[in-house]
Image (tube, rainbow, N blue to C red; front, side):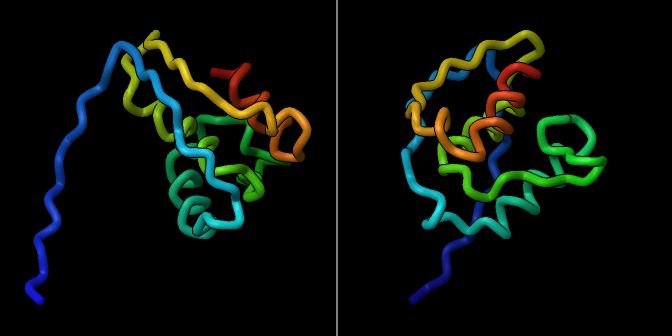
Length: 105
């Protein structure tokens, strides 16, 4: 089998992002990879992920939450984000962190 070359494509920033991200439970997510990714991006910019000055993203979050966090980098300043979400986060532990993130952004 011939190996395919991975192409890197620059994605532009947008005035708005509208999505219905996948609803995948956290048990199916490679949390160690995602946690390290978001720690690199958010350590100094998102208070929702800091607890006593230490980065701590709630690894119980469902996958669409990570998608929403990641979508911010594709928005222009004062851009708009519209996302369909499950209401499951309202009654889960990661919901408090997600709520703070939404209010901060």
